[in-house]
Image (cartoon, one colour):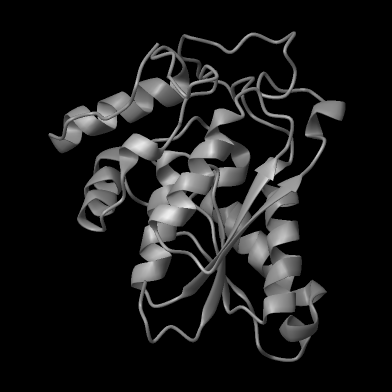
Length: 227
């Protein structure tokens, strides 16, 4: 962490590879990082344990875990156990998409950012090697940023909050290379949609496939623990 950091950022951290890299990039840019994770009724809670370890490893200013009950709505394989996590590729928006998840998460991050007088919100969305989720696209982020600065005290006061997406145009290979350069311990991260209670990955879901290919393409050893 930059010892001279005076500017603050709220960083969304799931415990996965992408968000851990985004956190490291925010820290390198000189931000004092206030990290926000969500227990939203997701299938694998081991990613929250991973988030706590990552936040500690990367020496963040504060880490909060907020409990949400998105499982009350369901509608996703990640929040409804009656829907199986797919293990084959699809050209459609997959059932692992959680309805409005990033909008909910970023709205809460926006509230904390206002309280902290933070300058930015970092989110590790990616529009290259991703699963086709509509709330990971650049046009969505731009629209949210516009909304955020219409809806907040500091936005209408002429001091807008920036939504930072440092991974948006990177391949998984490039993300892993950047995180490795910044000292991210990817062995701590959990990306699997159906990791077991020990954080071991299935190796078959969409997220596992993208992650494994990223390490191969980067020419680096994959530290993922598989079931």
